[in-house]
Image 1 (cartoon, rainbow, N blue to C red):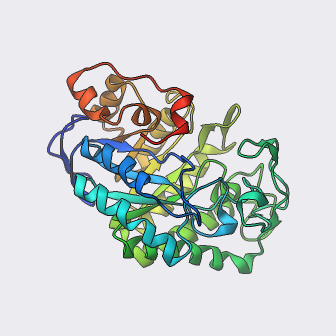
Image 2: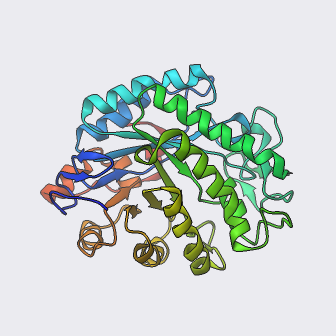
Amino acid sequence: MTTTESRALCEPWVDARLGRLSSRVVMAPMTRSFAGAGNVATAAMAEYYARRARHQVGLVLTESTAVHPVGDGFPNAPRLHTRHQAESWRRVVDAVHDAGSPVFSQLLHCGRISHEDFTDGAQPVSATGRAAEGICRRNGKPYALPRRLEAWEMPSIYEQFVDAAARASAVGFDGVELHLGHGYLADQFFDARVNDRSDDYGGSIANRCRFALQLTESVLSACGAAHVMVRISPSRWMDGLYEWPDVEAMLDYLLPAFDALGLRMLDVSCARADYQQTSGRIVRMVRPKWPHLLIAGASLDPEVAQGEIDAGLLDAVTYGQLLIANADLVERLRDRRPLIPFTNSMLSHLN
């Protein structure tokens, strides 16, 4: 359970795993595509993250960071596949720590939500051999046709995450967040509309959860519960409302299984959707089954965010676009100063 000094959104508090944090505002992972040649973190990225930490963001979650070239799905995105890539993150971690916040690396494998343009030419892999529908907005091309993973290959994917987590730890990250949502690889196993397998990784709810649970167990075993968070997105916006068709039954199975593995930190994300319509509904399903650290959000109005905390539904609140627009968001919220509205033009530079 979480222990606290204050339940105010913008005041310091203490969590049993994360320690003393400067606020309950969490910087959500936001892919910015500003990595340098070779998929390395840059000095500009270090300043970008540290600036939010200097303004009392309680916890920084980095942008999605691919664990392997085949798991990438973005232009100019950082990776944690090599020692050189990991070392590039050291200055980011040091800068955020010097500014007063802990920082977790969000580890990602995109699966079929990708294209050979982003995987160093390799064919993406997935739970299925069917391509995702639609056009990849990162290059304007149809999504690549993936190769269906064989059951014997699953441990190699888990090892990619374990290796990336070890590299993250070696350069000083306080922990990692496993991205198991937003339609990426783990979510491709969760969703019965995508997962068309007939082996131990498809069909029943238990089978469709197997990949994510085995992955989480592998990273927990290597890193420990104080250093592992998981992100799920059972309901989100992906060119329309998109939700696991058996969401309540999935959560009834998945959450106790996470708990039994020793997972103690969970992030519910809805990806550009209205909170009450998506994540807020899921949080109300999750909280009765999850007594541990729970975060969610989507740049909520401060009154709504505080209400979720006061009701015991959330322990901390994630902010994305509003933190791009307002590096001093916590101070503005605390002082009730006007917020700078987010515009898409802000995505073209780090500030």
